[in-house]
Amino acid sequence: MKKKPIYVEISIHAEIEKVWDASQKPDMHEQWDLRFSSITYLPKEEGQPQQFVYSRTAGPFINVEGWGKSVGTFHKDDGTRSSSLQFGTEQCISPIREGRGFWKYEPQKEGVKFFTQYDYDVNFGRVGEVVDNLAFRPLIGWATALSFDVLKRWLERGEAPRSQYMRFFSTYLMTLLFAFIWIYQGLVPKIIGMHEEERAMIGSVLELSEKGITTSVLLIGIAEVLLGISWLLYRNKKHLFTLQLILFPLLTIAAIIAVPASAIHPFNPLTFNLSLIVLSLIGLFISKDVPSARSCKRKR
Image 1 (cartoon, rainbow, N blue to C red):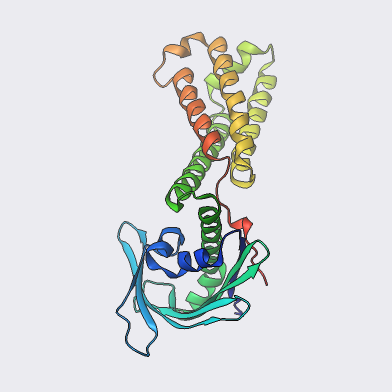
Image 2 (image 1 turned 30 degrees about the vertical axis):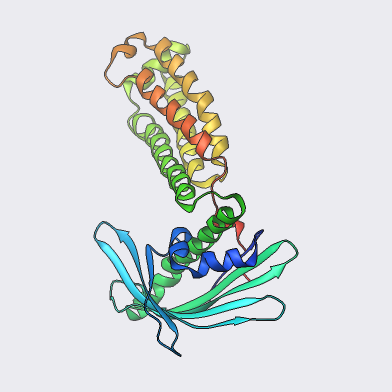
């Protein structure tokens, strides 16, 4: 199966020295690069490449450690810089066995064009190649591009990588939460279960026949499922948070008007929807400007 090297490029409005330091100094590099939890340079021997060790925590009980070495750096007269490296790991749990790549820094009128290209061999033979092409290679390419945008924002705006990642992952945890809520609420109590309370609420608001109530509940369930799916597919989450800040108060009022006794039930519509309103409000504020892998060029 043919594999393509991973290529990521971004323009950064900052001095080339700052971009160089942020990507070459371990204590700075490990802050913004999502691929590494830690990078430690080893004592350099005269005439030998700079060697380092890295680690990446991938879960509560998974920590991948590896080695690397900078095999050469080059500075041109026009200010262009480059750095080549080799990397790998002896751990069999790692999808990557060994690879090589480069960083390149090209001065522009306003800032630096910063790009990388790298490739690697995988573990687990043919199965590893298939999994890499279908899942891991797209994932690590995305992580590289997201990291480059975090670096860009750090150097241009001064926002620390840690706070950027907090906003990014908080936004997407809320995305998964709201997708689950809408899909579940549409699918289970309405489309599959056709719950009596759902029918009762529609019947108390609209004067419909039994067939009309069934159809209405079904259509509302479909609409909620589609809204849940939109959370997974629609890119501008700010619009969805804004929509929910309109929908949740309306749904709360409608539910209490339709069944006033529901206001005193445990986990009733008032308290449940109020918590979702607060989450939507928080999400609206933190999702306005999150880093994105789409800010990078992914092909030469």
